[in-house]
Length: 392
Ligand SMILES: *Cc1c(COP(=O)(O)O)cnc(C)c1O
Image (cartoon, rainbow, N blue to C red; front, side):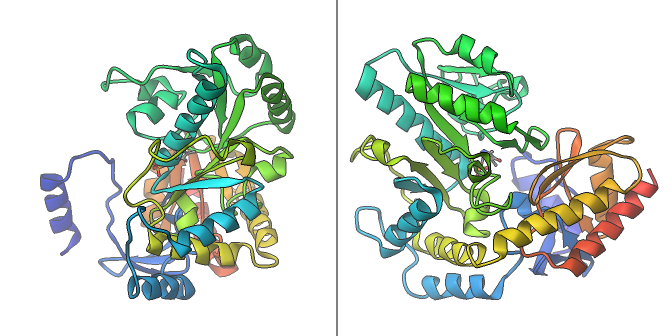
């Protein structure tokens, strides 16, 4: 099908929920991808932080294919070697004690919310169920995770939303403690707000928040759906903030391109979600687990995290030197570029013409390149970006 035909059929048969760029990607290797017309792009977006090893990584594809040829699915009514092995490894990498496997970031956050409320219910009884989240956050698209998202634009149309969420400004501990009365059971944060415009939280704020939550037995949930699995130069971002959360959620880059999510909790919370209180048909699917195992093999190899930090620093300093760049912020290979001129959306569209796929988040250009991107691919992408920014 040519692009015109795809666009017509998409427009006729799919619910129009996405504001799509005018391109259909067909085949890629590494950080380079071709559309149906053979035009080549460097990808600085990884399908929104998902293709952590780039397109069609040979080892990843082999691990996935081998599992698909043996056993593609077994119900969660039965034991699974793939799940047990993956959960053990995630606990070792994170310092958490137990894992629930699911299929997406929103589902991982749903599990975190249920766990926090059930812990509080079991321990303190009814009425201690409010979860505080930060203004400008993003936690997903289900009715409950939309309610958790601290942006008014997401609190529309789908009334009534799940009750029991309240919002506080990021970085302001006094505002949070003022709301933390006896009804609060948890605080949920992103350490670098992704969809909200690539905004890292301050180290001191996060440490003080951790101490406050501990004193009050308020659970600290860290949403690492976008920041996790090596994206910011450590396995999880909180490992750079010097804290240990009570609950961690993970998805996006975890499967390297297959849908998998995980909700991890501290050992002391490991018994809260008992048989019958939660579940999902696909969660911990063997192919998704094999994909995640392979991603973990690669991102935990010696030197990998250092290379993420180095590439992030390289991209950052190259972009800081470009015209019309007001600021670059972020952590590791999660970067936001504030432009002094033009809109991020227009710049991203112009980049596409230059053979560069780049994301936006609110008013910034957002980079989430494959963690395995090469120096040559970075340079090709940067050249395209420079050209676009020069012509603003
Ligand atoms: C993308 C994202 C989600 C939602 O993940 P889905 O897999 O789209 O459900 C939740 N939290 C954060 C921080 C995200 O970036």
